[in-house]
Length: 110
Image (cartoon, rainbow, N blue to C red):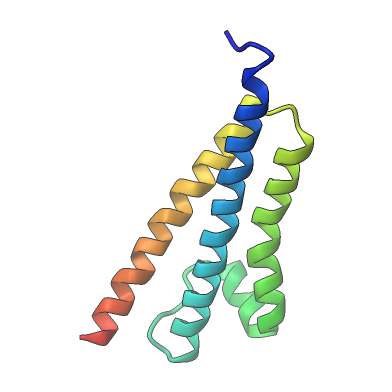
């Protein structure tokens, strides 16, 4: 069972995880933009492909806006289980996507 002393530490961990998520998302957006501009990749997500075709700045706003909204929810919430699961899931997804981008960069470089 958590004590009152544990909550600030838990909140700091969630904030650190949220900041890491925002950084991973920024890297994902930059690598995706790079791959699309040079024609090395095709965007598999139809919504993101549509946003990219409409406006590259809008693409960046949406790609960075979603994790920032989640980070805001972390700061105002009481660190519920739903927030922790959402944050953990998003981190795992973005780590996997970032690994794919690194793989693509290595393949293109060869």
